[in-house]
Amino acid sequence: MLLGWPQKGPLWTRAVQACVDAMEGKVTPDVAREPSVRLLRRKGCTCGILR
Figure 1 (cartoon, rainbow, N blue to C red):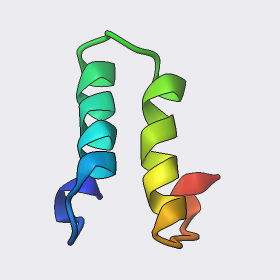
Figure 2 (figure 1 turned 60 degrees about the horizontal axis):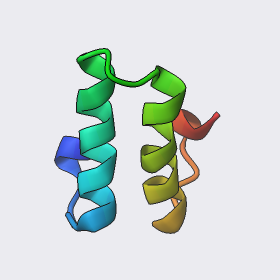
Figure 3 (figure 1 turned 135 degrees about the vertical axis):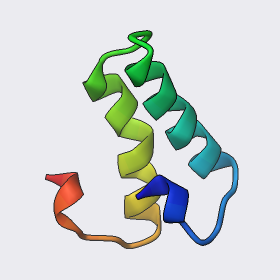
């Protein structure tokens, strides 16, 4: 979902870095999920990924 995001900025960069960190085992999935949720909420997305 993040790779297809139309506008990339600082919040998007943090969300992508958090995902990479989770894949490398540097952070837990819950920690990595928070930047993505913030990005989606800021953009008004109410999709199922936030549940």
